[in-house]
Length: 110
Image (cartoon, rainbow, N blue to C red; front, side, top):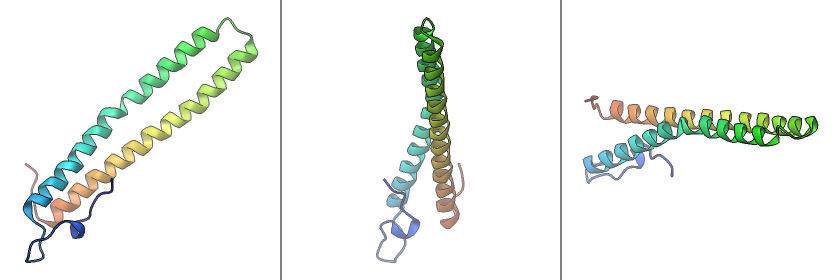
């Protein structure tokens, strides 16, 4: 789902965006930011749980297997870091979009 710019929102006969369309768009943006923020803390805990369980299960294995498991989880750790970074970048982009809407239409934070 892409974020609509103020120019893409439904307009009334005067060429100005309708108030209900603006409120709906801002509500969607706000919900998306909350979703990204609520998911951000889950990724590190899921990664740590998976790493811990796998390392405990492979601790009785040969050192070569343990090294392979550890290197695999390093790669997954980097992927988890990138996922969190991308999620936070997207949330920041949405907040900037909300600020743009408020500035464009002279709305004040309540």
